[in-house]
Image 1 (tube, rainbow, N blue to C red):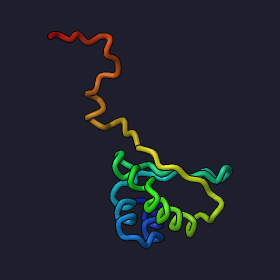
Image 2 (image 1 turned 45 degrees about the vertical axis):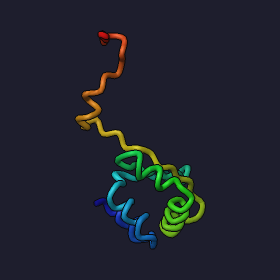
Image 3 (image 1 turned 30 degrees about the vertical axis):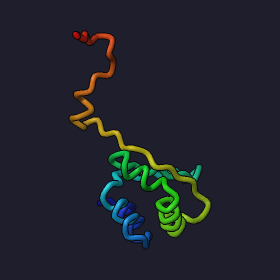
Image 4 (image 1 turned 180 degrees about the horizontal axis):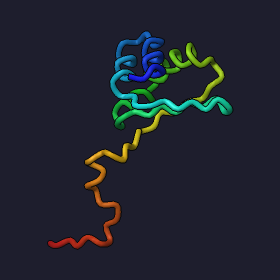
Amino acid sequence: MEHKIKALADAITHVHTRSLIQTHVRDMVFNEETRHLVIYVDNAAPMHELQTDEGDHHLNSGLSEIYGDDITYEVKIHHDAKNERNKNVPHTLKDRKFTK
């Protein structure tokens, strides 16, 4: 686990939210100029949990402890090009022939 992800997990006191950060966060990218943080998670379920009122409250308190109160942040899904499941999904359907 990267140091910045571990630091965020340690700053969060809520056990479930801390577990979500430790288990599902893949990367965090912070832009110093705009003071904007993008948190990348591995799938949609933890992203939605972190965006609930309770998850957002605990995530916000941990982030403000590390980055201060003047940041903005968003949670996104980390799209890994090496993901085998995504490689097998056709991106266009016009070339596919369907039979009844």
